[in-house]
Length: 132
Image (cartoon, rainbow, N blue to C red; front, side, top):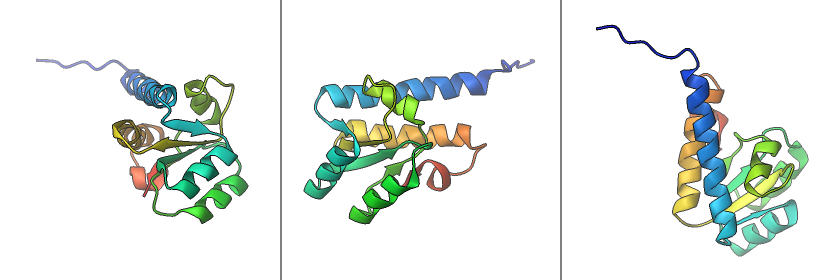
């Protein structure tokens, strides 16, 4: 029995993972469980409301360092671009975002790890997309 795999299977899976992550973030946003922007994320971090922090992979390192100084133990997703992250918030681009505690935050972290595997040629999620 011959098994044939579509040559674009990896690209299809990557696109579906991305769509799922953006949908989860959008759902969290509509439910009041997600914010974007440096100041809002900083406020949520100070209040201890953040379960997952998201930073665009193509965003500047200065803002990332400032937020990292506030909290180190929060999972940090860096696998999405600013444009991809912006889609979840109905904007052209977003560099910093945060998700509140709950199942959607957990799923975004899990799916981001999977997406990182596709984007980084199979390196671990810890090294490329989600850090804890």
